[in-house]
Every structure is written in C-alpha cells, then in structure tokens.
Length: 138
Image (cartoon, rainbow, N blue to C red; front, top):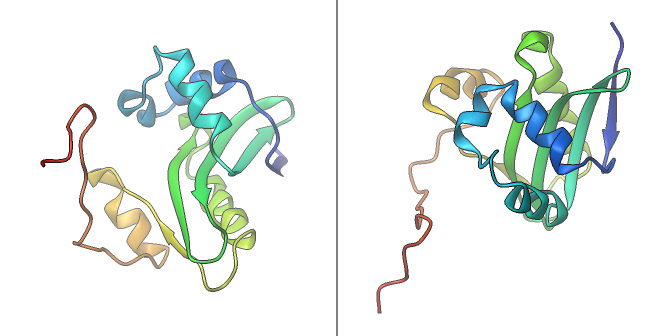
C-alpha cells in the first residue's frame, strides 16, 4: 500500500465526516453538523491529508501563524489504517510546514497520552478551556 500525503488539498465536509466516523475522534466531533464541519475546514490554514488512492485515510487539521504557534486541532486516521505510521507522518508533514520557532500544540484524548509522549511531546498542565456556550465572567 502506498499512502500519498497532500498539503492543503481541498476536502469536502462529507469526506471529513466520513473519515471521522471511521475513527474514535468522531465521538468527540460534531459529525451531525455539516455546517460546523465545513467551518472547521474553511477556517483551518494548514491541513495535511493521507490518501490510499482516492480514499481519505488520515487528516491533520491545524490553525497556525506558522511562526510562533500551531494548534493541531484534529489528528484522525482511519482505524483500518492505524499503526502504520500514518499519524506520525501527518505530524511530520505538519511540522515541516511551520518554522522551527513554532511550537506545536494539541489536546489529546486521555488514551492517547502515551502515544504523544513517545513522539517527543511534553505534557503541559497550563491549558485552560472555556466550554462552548459559556461566557467570560464580567
């Protein structure tokens, strides 16, 4: 099998949803809300995709300034294609598109902590989240 990686290759919301449903990430993404998914794709400025022929099998979707910080907001690999190095390669390709001064950030599912640690990421306890629908307290 030959996996081809593409940078900023346009994908449809439907293709992304289909991939998400073939991963555990689909449980934590709004796969029933095509408008939201389309907005996620349209407003990302770095998307690396993995293809097995014409089949989308992996995505690394990021929002970045390319110089200081890159938020890798989605890393998804089709469950049938996991443990083949595709997720790692998606991250390598992402990192290749940002400057060496740029930090790569992500929020991992608890079950993925060991995976990211073995790739060289360090855990950061200083992350804060304002949940959807919550307002800044005034």
